[in-house]
Length: 413
Image 1 (tube, rainbow, N blue to C red):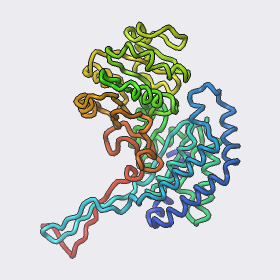
Image 2: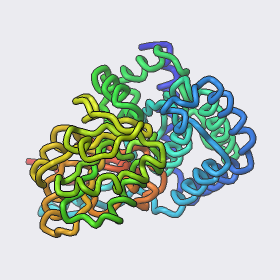
Image 3: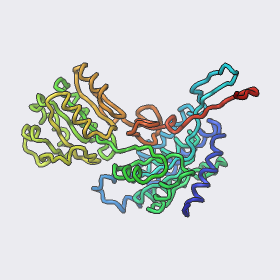
Image 4: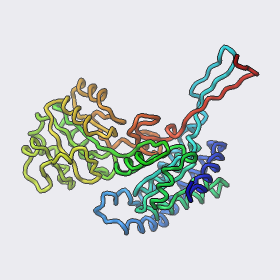
């Protein structure tokens, strides 16, 4: 097929050996990796610094690329959380005995070989390995050139712990950070069972449009929070500030504040913490007219709605009622995470029922859309589609199932 066929064949063949590992063996490897990551913090930071030196600090991707001691310790903690989770394999989903005596059992099994295409997020390398190993899957990783030094340093640690336990390093491979490798992975039919892109909307669109391998879309988040007419102002201030500024470069960060027109007199107070945090606001006509002049506030253009900013930027949309809020979300949402701040239970119930998104919130920050926060351990990504998996994808989402049939000589007439 391509010069990468040998790599794909190696991953596929080696991944079959993973299914026989016991949960105890898997957890020992993950424990070794968490410990090694913490011991090798200087090594990882040195590699990460080589990547950071090639990127401007004002690039929205810079924060995603950045590793520091605290983040590496957090990654190690997430790996240890995966250890505490039960194996997703060999779970009996269904069992029945037919009138002819055949025993039918439906059990969970690995997907097989999972391909991951991702941009400047070296933590993904740790995360997806932990989940893939625990779910019995091989990995073909295709990181972006921005994080290549970091990704290769991380994979070096992964291979060290595998070699220590006598396990096949060939089951987990990182392709070169070039376009030829991307093309080969997109066309790896017969080798790669599913492809998961993690990154910008542009990356996800490219993979979806060009892949010949089945794709699960993840990542892009155009996130809204609607402040209803009955919303508690202090709750709204805290939720909006956290949703926007906790980590503005990630997919669950707030992109558009939707506000009921009756709350416009309080809009200056509502957005004051955002301005103090350096957020640039793009306000529609009604909200702009209610705001005090400020260098960080500008009139919104149509292009500001439906934009995933991934930075300290946010749009503001004014609506007359809940129906208008729902219509705006339906038009611009990427079906990732959406929230309402309200004390009206009827409105809350309608919002949670009618909004079509992977995660829908009432009176809480969208920053919680995260595999670790949901108790899933590290995540493979956040799926915004509806087939196979939706929302944070972790161990169970990396499995399929098969039917196991036991008989005693039955034949079909």
